[in-house]
Image 1: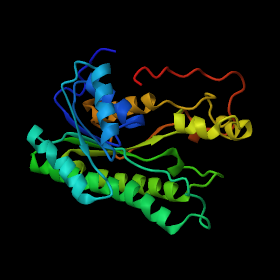
Image 2: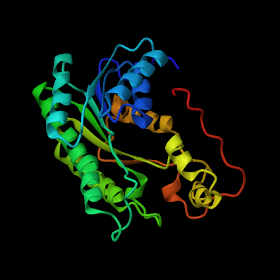
Image 3: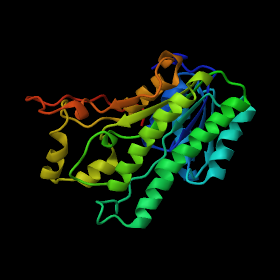
Image 4: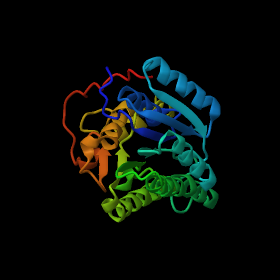
Length: 278
């Protein structure tokens, strides 16, 4: 895939950038000509991620890393302000988040897990948005794109509870919508990415050979398959680019139609795109 230049000259920050959607987005951003700052809590994972970006896109203009715990405002502030020397950020993808194994229903979820989840998934996004606005103003930018990772679970219920996670992603949707309206006249756009379930090693290991558990999930996909991280990354590129200049305050569902399905089609499943980046 050749560089198209849709993000040429833009300075972009990606949190949770060491793997999954974040890394796939970094690779596509690099192909589109962006200068990229990858942030994550694991420095070894960041080093591997940068090596992967450079391997897949040897023409990448600039890709650097910074360790950041998004639940700590000082870390987020330092991350965003580090791009002032680049001319200031133009795009931030607030993608870092967790879904803890002990996250359950209202009765069983421990308070410490609830607080941890909200601290990373909600406060972390708030800090990213806050310091993005301050950066855009400080660097006298007339436009900027802030993209926050929410989830399809924020718009529909599930009988396999993950209450702290679901509540946190609902908060991201509400926060993003409000910020989109508050800052619209400044030219700053805020949009939420709402991924459906993705085909990741973590998910496949968890499902294993448990066919009933797998069927309970796969049956809801109109396409008959899980999504791929790279499919989410393509959506992020669109939201980051000027092609989406009139897209603001959206809950961008990239879930294969799952959230709109009542009865799914009969017949064979669709074969998904190959993940050519990882």
